[in-house]
Length: 497
Image (cartoon, rainbow, N blue to C red; front, side):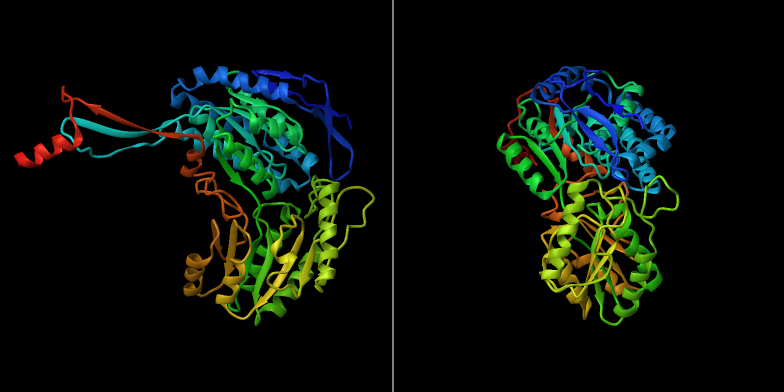
């Protein structure tokens, strides 16, 4: 296979890194080199920020409906190129075609949704204290936005960030995950072909140092990060110390609660998809199964059979259910948790080892049983196809176990009891709650994000997605023709009445 040459996109031009240094993107199913991309340094980031600053002067003055129309064009081009983008994504990061197609579709949906904000971007009016005076609050752009995004959703996650940022009138410098430079460049090309002005969106590929430089650059006003908790907290500490606005979406340790009255067949399907889809490499993946004692034997038996029936392989093949982990480091991490499980006395019901394949970073879908609240495998994010089973006696205990971890992204409950469902909605302390559905599958019209160690209170998608990339401007229009002083003039009006 020919190695693809990827370039940075800065100021409307495709360019190499100024140092000439590159790094390789590896197909995780074959371990072959797929692409070679610029290893960007400080000069490259500075050039991208400078281009974004220059473009901001005119982009912020472009009428918002015109900005929205460009995003509609982005959606149309994405739809036309959906299959090609999906195949490239599978080649580069491994998940199966059904999932990469869904990844692109989320970007299409978000482009249409945020494109519509070009004719809305709602502010509000409110009554004011004085006569002949008008008050309103408007959303305003911020400036240059820096984005640092992961490899596991290399089109969807960037779209959740850059599309609201762009429609609000900001310009963007984007540093994607280092495992996915080729699909990131292909996504950027869509914006170029849609007619986005030069400098409004800039792409710089690279490793951790590239991201650190972007975080530190004084010309970047807002930082939006999705990735590991350890890296996210470093980004937050550094950026906040420089007075920047920061939005974080980090780890998860998501659970499905299964009550004795649950629809067993439905639960098995949902748990399997949520735990082993994307090879468990989602922030919303189910990594804990909190199951009530009565249904546990039947549920576990069905899950073991289902896990063993899954086909591992190259995600481009239609018969494949589970692709590879993204790289050797990820494979080593998941393998390392098998040692942790043995040390904690946990039973491996199925899986627990690297798949027997000549090439590729494949790990068998794994089920742990006998997991107790507080164990490392129950508390720590493994980020692989590993599901820990925790047995509980009651709904109350299940909710307590769910809420006891450091993360709070997504949770789910399977029950046929409407009272139990509404108690779960009230008491599960996660940013997303599902009833009779897995922990994955968020829709773009609702806020996405989590509590506790998952984030810092900001949300992506929906109307809330605009909050990270706008500032509120309060406007007062006094048409009385004289200076009105609130307290003095208010007292006078009240006295006259």
